[in-house]
Amino acid sequence: MVSGWNWDGDESLLRFDDPVEWDAAYERGEGPLGSAAIGLAFNCPLAEASPRIVRAMQLPDVAQRGFAFTAAGIAARLNGELTPELYAALRAEGPGRMSIAVNAIDDTLDYVPFRQLPLWLKCWKVVSKVQDKLETWRLESSYAVSDAWQALRRRSRAGRPRRPL
Image 1 (cartoon, rainbow, N blue to C red):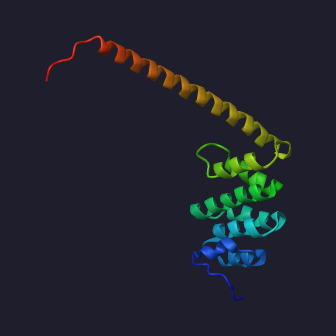
Image 2: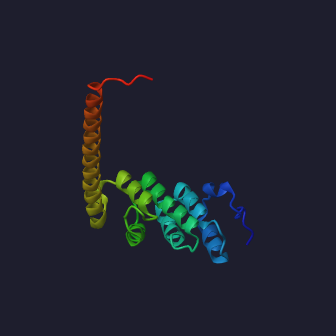
């Protein structure tokens, strides 16, 4: 089978729209399958793109896996939903801040209605909102203490006579 796509990292893979060709490229072991998964997310129905995105999430190349998670985030943005397989793949990777899936999970939380999220993702949304609020309060109090300390230092310096040069 002759492919019409340049599998040597060409940017045209972002326009990729052929799930059958993606399957053939996967069987051949082509390199930029994660990039092509982004193209599938943009150009194919979610039901057709989803199994290929999940397979791309398991590629050995970390960069291509990252592109596959980007494709999941794009699918959430464009469709306002994900398939159960994509939710399972995101859960397997984990929602932590150091996870490769963090941006895809954030996109899912932003673009999929709360009532349609699976329970684990609803819980993560609540936990992450509480963490964000606590971090905001910590930073605000830190800034207030720093500002008060600087004001005290300026005031104590104002009472001292200046030294001649």
